[in-house]
Image (cartoon, rainbow, N blue to C red; front, side, top):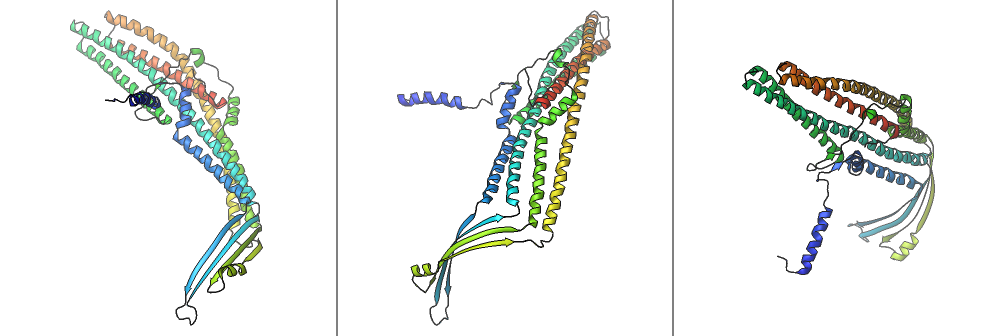
Length: 439
């Protein structure tokens, strides 16, 4: 029991504050696609690691630029010697102090090209992070659509279970009245159990897809996630596609991986220049000041003064033979340059295949959606009439089960083709504009 009024007031203040600071991730909430993208942008581990690579590249660039600066170091050494059999002094002490500076005047352009290359690598790392985010957005889109599809599939199978259960119950009544055989009842009851099994599978698929989304978002195991429902009209599902060639060109223009590969080719050209610099002379300057002290000898101050020395020098290094190291380095750099061009060509081909496949899949899904609409109307009417005739005893169980299956399959086909068409449309939209708009 708290008797102190101040402590009681503090407690009443702190507890609400702590509750406000508790993350709400573990609480079930409704997520839109945009919510998922923004959350992943901040929390996805792969993205965070890629951003660290960007920082590392920045540090490497700073280090490369610093090579224009001279180096400076201080060195000192101290030694003590013992001469046990010497007739004079048995011990001596030597010390030296030096300040040395060095600067590379020219090294064949390696320093300049290294700075240029590190700038390119920094840009490549930035593009790599952007491409990783784009890939994450498309992964999120596909998983998001799969979850919506699985959720609607559950609704279909729930309704199927209700219908088949009613049919099974009606068959039981007819069997008890002697109007239906036990075999016919068993068949309808088996259909009911099969629909229940399909419902369990649909629920399992829904849970699996939600787990995949949680993994992309880096959500904890105890978190729950519910997606906002999205409705699409028939006009949206059957929307006409933009010209294929236009989409391909826009995909090339906005593809960050392709941009990174093109910059990588520039970097490989600099690798060749850096390797060739191994054949060129190198010039460096060095200077230093130093002093020392020897004991026994003169006084410390006198010894340090008289030992004071200054030096300056110029070094010219001309390579003559290096066991083919430079020649091999140039050859390797040229191979890497050719490989970089092949990577660019391959990326062009991959984008063309990717875009064309999405067009083929989307058109196919739209055609199947149109056909499924007509099929569903016929299957629904047939199922309703068959149910009425069964209740009147005019059709057998085989006909009833056949119409029931046809109706469920028609609904599922329509649902599947709808989501495949919308996924294709949204993927094409993304490759054209680098963005996706979901209701």
